[in-house]
Length: 454
Image (cartoon, rainbow, N blue to C red; front, side, top):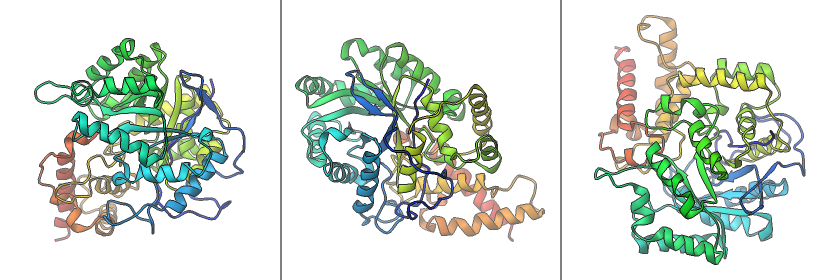
């Protein structure tokens, strides 16, 4: 089997190196042209196995939108990345009305419409999470056409269903069925304004099963799930409410529903493995990036139509294109190696945040993704001290590294100790992280370090 998937490693947006210079974490070598790997959708349309996710686009001056409410996207940089992707065969671009404070669709439309329409396919979503009246939902739908500057949408998704409220009502029913929105979208598909209708899933297995079973009625053109070499067997073990990817893939494969992959690198964490795990992969193929292993793993599954890479810098585009042009299948020994890496990773106590920012803004100003990213990075770099080592030199080194970097990484008023446990974030987290509990854990750990200074 051949093919691949992609998601770029998290980098500081807007800081790209000169072409040809090796950036840390990326492979060395020329980027092939005209060798992109393609799959087909239900209508025989060729789709690049590398999809461009427009959720982590660069910001003017670097940084991110969480820290600067007045920040704007770097349209010039976005245009360069899109140009490079299209020149090298990428044709699937994924956005949503809620991405990047509502700016992603507009920026995506500007970048893509500089190219002939037959060179690119656009995917966007019905992101009616907070207001799901028919009127508001249809207004969101029509606004996507205007923002993207298109007369048809190639792939339209019912965005991120899977929850059930206290009354036992599923968000799929509330957001898409009871208000008549799904019937409307079915009519739009008949008219050709929507070429392919599908959905993305984060939630309970029972809700996934219900919607998959509706395939006979709605004839889903595709479905989007989270899958990577860790989530294949360990998603449920990392967070109890998550569903293992082997189950999701298997159910869709049985019905021959094309699959779009999100988070193949777990928000970039599989491209920044700790030293021990990274060494295992580098020892096998030293010239390949860590990210490429995850892409090639996904390429081994023929039902995958494309996999979304949230790219924010030109090096990410180059590295991902290199991996997909064409995809080199993994050997049995390499698949077994990834199984061992996944097992070790799943039992490493990281917080499974993918920095999707669905939890933001926090009503009390916390930088939730930033706090989790900092904690995970500290853990991977060995800067989380073990219990019972207060008098040891290693504890003092880890304490100093953690405390001095925390204030530099996260503004004090946005740190974990300002969480009041309101729970507003819980209903929006697609990874089902117990966010207030994690904040209390990080606050407690930080206080322990500070108390040990006295």
